Length: 508
Image 1 (cartoon, rainbow, N blue to C red):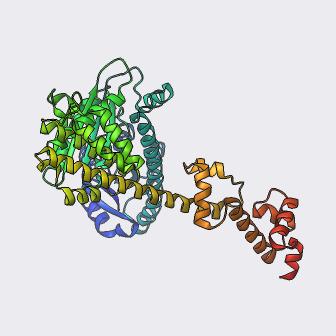
Image 2: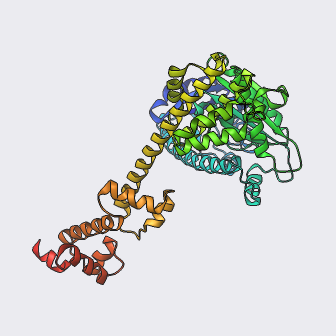
Image 3: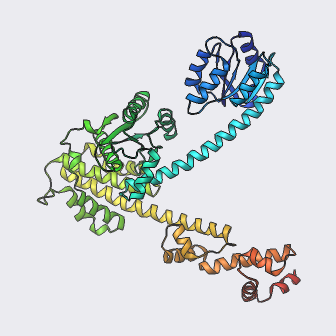
């Protein structure tokens, strides 16, 4: 529903508008009523209506002043329709200069207003659809941009792109806010947009499913970002599992990745301690065990899991859980717990990138081996690690195979739709992010034919249809079937059917 605000200093006019007009029929609902310009301005700021019906002459602030103020002070002004008892040319001229949608004379005409509502409803909905498409495209662009940044790309071109987006050239102090929650990401995004500052990025999603926002230290943007994070936590206190973490980078170099990593560290610290709420990286204890993850041993174990080398798991697990200096079992149980927590996070990240169900995976592991927070002996930690790694190896292989099958299916669908175009296996492999040789083998396994055989069959079937159902010449049919010229088409048609296209047409 679209929101409409009614503004008039005469109660009988407001009563008439409220009762005479079928607002629901045109997709509107009355979100508020005001009897003077000051009250109307407060409602416009707080309620953000899509449409405002307003009188011209009112106490404190006139209707024309209200319109002018809205257009100059609001990021997105509502549309305005004037209701007036004056048909003065000067009033109408001023209203047109301010680009109001319509100028209606009192007394109120129900049919006239409903005609305006029909037009306004269509305009506003088209505008909303256009804005949603733009927002979706921009969100995809932002996510791609920040994903490259977070993964370690530090090219000057990428930095310039991000600097331009945040309008932060010359400003190196950065902050990143990350939100981990089980409530709707769209609800959180709406809240972020309601607070959004000029030097904030669009929200993005990282590989772990956390919602993030970057801000440059300009015009109080960092304080506003932190304030927004605390407000989101307070709003949802007691209603959901939520962690909001902030990381801050100060320095002379491009610091977005540093700010993100600090925010992620703070979020993991909060999760590790089984807590929710707000946390700032600067407030963390300096000697926290999360800082002591054996990154080399973790990377080696993940490499074995991803490659599916089950026989090498045991040695890599022991290396992760051992003292990195002595190579012996570590006596500090908290250190061992942190290594496994880091392993869990790495596995879940890989599974999420393959669109796997991380929640079901962890529930399955915990049903087999219990929860990591309740383990208090080295043998139990080692057993948990074995169960976690074996299940991860199996789940990742299964998801990779399912994703590859899904990709092959999408390739076949694409060929079915686009066979008239010039298609090459190498280009399709690049488009669908696959190895060309593997794609060729998988394509044949899926369809029973090589890529070239399948493509020719589709084109010949289309040519047969056109020969049966149309009077187009052979040259046109060749082009419409995907062949570059008539001679090549005729030779292929003869090879595959045993007759010329003209002979095939005569038989039908």
